[in-house]
Length: 368
Ligand code: PMP
Picture 1 (cartoon, rainbow, N blue to C red):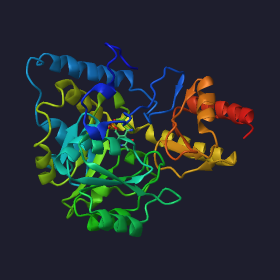
Picture 2 (picture 1 turned 135 degrees about the vertical axis):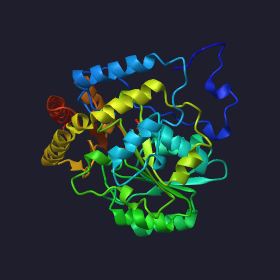
Picture 3 (picture 1 turned 30 degrees about the vertical axis):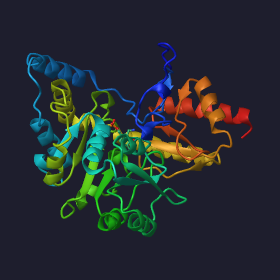
Picture 4 (picture 1 turned 30 degrees about the horizontal axis):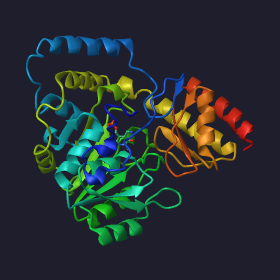
């Protein structure tokens, strides 16, 4: 939308040259019956959990004349407990979504004259946050099956000497989890910081190890997580990281004071106290994911192996037509990733049945 105040548009404003012509993050927010486009957990919190949130918010509302705990100490202690791996609160940091965590990391370790390398296709916000912090984005490549070849990754790192390396495991939008050996090879080769974005970790197949196990002895490794996905708390906006305490200390240089509101901290703590309930839907979502992969493959489609709560499938000469066809049936998925592919988030059983029915109809119409 362009607001017209005398014909002035964005192009007329003195924005930074490196932002000119760039597109903002833009997953469409369309009000349709079946929303399978932003990888949320489709199951809402229970009325009991909502009541506990309301009570915590009521209690803390009585203190809203004061700024929140700037260090979010109690929340970080809860997050450290949740993560396990003998982590302590000084190794954990929290912010408004893992996007803000990533932005703070880039503010400290990136910036003008510095660079960040990621392996595409991956999460579209990595380059956006990189460029937003005036850091140069270096697009590395994934292989045919969307994995990362450690030799190629090490070669790219040696060639570009990036200040920050992004690894996403499981990867968005492909669902691909990385073996620990690949992460270790990258961490050894990287001259700067290595971020392992584990936003979807809880959905990984049983036995998939977390990069958290690599933190001891790797002070330049950062593992980021979020409560937006498996934890079913996307509306809360709570992301966090685990890293060496010195990394957490470094982030204090750029974080805005009191960035995490009293109400966010209170809500997140209630959610963590209900972790068992919230994560209780993960097994059902994983089963639904595996069934979705099987169903799509049985239809002769190409489907990427997924360790996340979404599935990348294709290939369509005109993916836009398929995306629009689904939307006409009230099913919103995401046009993202390599040109011929589409991504569907895993919803409830009912929502996935609607997706299957809609896709069947659309493919019949398209003659695919
Ligand atoms: N990392 C990845 C890989 C993601 O897909 C997302 C959300 N789509 C995020 C981070 C950010 O999530 P949030 O800011 O809600 O924590």
